[in-house]
Image (cartoon, rainbow over all chains, first blue to last red; front, side, top):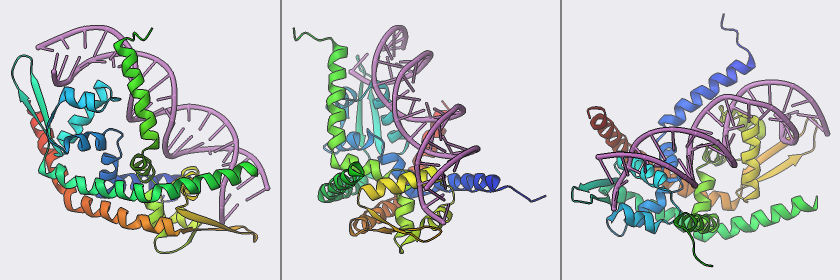
Length: 135
Length: 135
DNA sequence: CTGTATCCACCTCGATACTG
DNA sequence: CAGTATCGAGGTGGATACAG
């Protein structure tokens, strides 16, 4: 019997939507670069390779766990490369790949819009909050 | 006594970093557009104004709560406008503002990079996962 | 039609401790 | 030096019920 309740229809729609979003390239990209540490790491590496400890110092607020985790995911995505020098102590360098470098102009665009328009956004927020407060 | 432990120093650095990120325009922008429903709503409105119920249908997977919440935050940011027609039943239209329209080219850029390069990213992921699995 | 209010399952992230 | 393992607090978002 194909009779379904409204709730079931909504649930089905939500599932289909999740499936769509999971394979949507733009969605995947946004999920990647919107991560708190991703743009910071990529920007830090834009000037050249860095060691793990260098990154840790440059990005002062990051925990070991998140730094490692983020680096791994970026390596998995082919945006940066990880090279181990088996000395004692071991040395690990991270470097942008060619693919990773193609991402930098996009990040610059985002930065550009933000620097041009975020003052307007913040002004709009203030207006909105003032009106709400006086209500 | 300015003597602090390493843990205290890390904590202080993390706090400063949070403060920096909270005021960083690019960070704010990324936080805004990386929201699951924001780009979908903005894209839906790019063709012209829509009513609440239209949006609800166009973006099939969204819950009432998230649709309202996201619309409110976008209105607060000045990216779209909300106009109420006090008929019975009440009618509410949402429309991109000029500021909101300036965001569309950026979204197009993101979509462009994604469509051009996400196949490479997915290929890199497959390679990485294969190597890991065979380890 | 257009919301608001509440509850809760889930998941992410940071802190901490430990290792080759 | 460069990680890994584990745990718990906190926030997010969906389902549901209700309202102007």
